[in-house]
Length: 271
Length: 307
Image 1: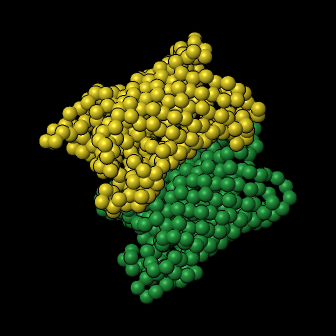
Image 2: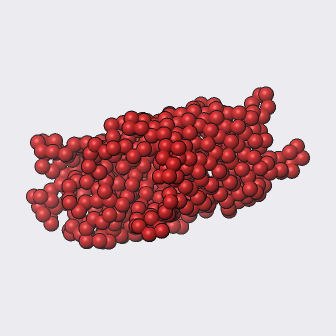
Image 3: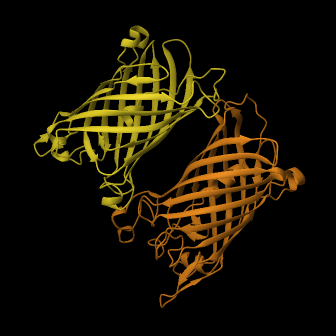
């Protein structure tokens, strides 16, 4: 259930290059990642077998212009997690552990700010968990114009469970994530996303009640484009990275360890 | 309602998309092509009173909602004998409000009762276009059921079609033949009929129609047959008999474009009525309190999108 934080506020991308194979107002992004472990906001889901995470998103650019409201975009997408281990084939007899559907509205305001609201339905086709429905709000700031290579692109995400619970606790929770994604490079890109996940209320319920600290993570991600520019088939990349996650007591009790190192590699498409 | 557990009921992913492709006329474009690249995105959402997969009933109450999306790659286009090569990936889904979905009787679907999402299919197609409007494609499809309405069915299908509209104009018939083979099956597992043996399916069809600037209408017609073990039916002693005739279908579908091609692609609304005449196996699956029913009428309405 990791998609919301990645995709919360990204407006449908601007169009216009003469070499652009898709100058219209609809964009497609897709990815397929392979990872050794899946933690959703620090909550352990599976660290056995192989985990495949295919995803796809359509972005609709409703408005692009000047003034204080730079752009308005709508995003709809799906994110999936397929497991060969205990949360999938080995444990539940079916590969397809998770299917998330989301729809979001994203605004670019002023020179660098982004505001987004996203509704997400987290489903489990193999009945690994009960459906969770959530609305989230994301506020982001792109400081690259001001700070150049020193930019950190900070954001704040606030998510409220409407029905169902990620922690399978006694009450719907409210989640707060503070993060940043510093990085360098526009073609080959290296980024170092940092995240802190907190419970505002009832998001990390455990034996001792709700714990405020859920996790902190830092990662290194390398993205390598497969062409120097867009082709008729869009822009493709391969990417890979390593993430170190430090867990709170509640999530440690489930994982059986205080920390986890997650490796991943995948391909991406933008069209 | 007897039929819904153990018996595979799946979707017409290819049929739905084919219907979209067939019924979408090349309307004059009011705007510059927003997507001159090699990728094409199509999507549909349809609402139906009844879902029959190749004549096999999938729900008895409520409605079915079919969201689908397809991504097409135009891998090659040229002039010689081979005109085009395309690759498609897609997903097709069926959401049910009735007895095989949100209103499930828990004795039928076990722990997955009450879940709307009855079916989710994934497919990949490699298609070739030749001169004279001839096309050939092969499709792998995995039919899965998120609410455990049936066990996963895996199938490979081959389709040969002819677009004779260049020769016949408005009288074009657009015939096709499709053969599908189930694989990776077991007794009562991984099969559309929930039968003993994996099945081989043959469909012969055509899609005559008429397109005008403001609307199009199509009359798809098809017959579904079992080449081998596709429409198995168990008798009172548990012995299975394969019935060759699965169903015959004829429909009328009207498609109305919504404003031509814009920077947001081409949108349409469409709707239609389909009549199915069922064989012995499919009539049994279509039983009600009066016993097997040989006829089924399906109404649908939806919208489509192509970019």
